[in-house]
Length: 355
Image 1 (tube, rainbow, N blue to C red):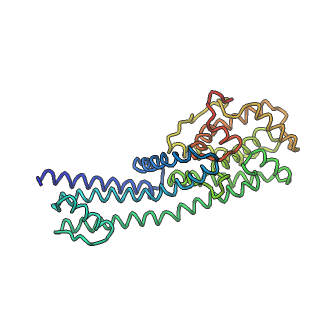
Image 2: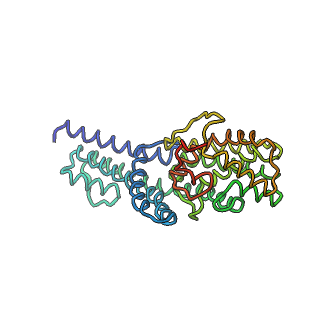
Image 3: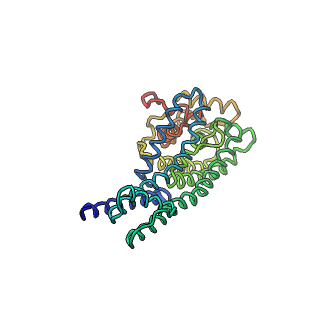
C-alpha cells in the first residue's frame, strides 16, 4: 500500500472518530442546545420508519402505542450508530498503519472496540490505537448509561406536574375547566401559587428539553396526557385570567405566560420551527373571537366575575396568545399530541383560517 494512501486512511479514520466523539459530546454532555447533524439524521430516519405504521393506525390509541417507542428506541440506536462509525474509523486507521487486508483491519477494530481480544495488534502504533478504541467504546456505552437516569429524572418531574394538572383542569386539560374548578373550590385567590409553580416548570422544561431533546418525544405514561397540551392549558388559563377575569392584577400570571412562551420558543428553535419573535398584539391567532366569547359565557355561567369590557378583554387575551400560538400548535403537531381544546385540536389548522 502506497505511503500516501496509508496516510490518507489514517487521516480519514481519525477524522471520522473525532467527529463521532464530538457528536456524542454535543448530544449528551454539552449543557446547551446543539442541533447535531448526526443525531438529527438518526432521529429523523427512525421517525420516518415509525410514521409508516402510525399512518395506518385507525385510532389515536393505536398510533400512540406505536409512537411511544419512537424516542426510547431512537435513544438506544444512537450509541449503536456511534459505535459503527468508530468501528469504521479505526478500521481505516489500522489499514493505514499496515494491518492488512481490510477484513483483518475490520476484525481488529471490532475486537478492540468491544474488548473481545481475539485479534492481537502488531507493533506499538496499532497497540496504542487498539487501547484508545477500547476506551472510546466503553466510554460511549458508559455515557448512555450515565445519562439515562438524568433523562428519566427530568421526565418524572415533568410528568408529575402534568398528572397533577389533570386534577385541576380535567382530561383533556382545559383552561376553562381549570378556572371553573378553582372558582367552585373558592380558591381563585390562590391562583398565584399555580402560576408560580408552572413558571418553575416552564423554566425546567426549557433547560431539559433543549439540552436533552429526546425528552420532547417521550410520551406520557397515560396516552391521553401530554406535556405540550398541559402547557397550552396553563398558558390559556393564565392569559384568560389576566385578560378577562375580574381579579386583582397578579404579576405572577404575567411571569408564568412569559416563562411559558419563552420555553416553547427555545424548544421550537432547536427544531427550526419558524415563528415571529416579536408579533403584533393584534396578530393572527388560532382562537376565534367567537370561541373567546363562548369561553367567557361559560365562565360567567359558572359564577366567575368577568371584567365588563369584553372587547378590551379580547384584545388583551389576543395580545398574550399571539406570543405562543404558533409554537404551541407546531409542537403539538410535532409530538403528535392527544386531543386537547385550543391546542392540538387545531395544530393542523391553516393559518389563513385563523382569527
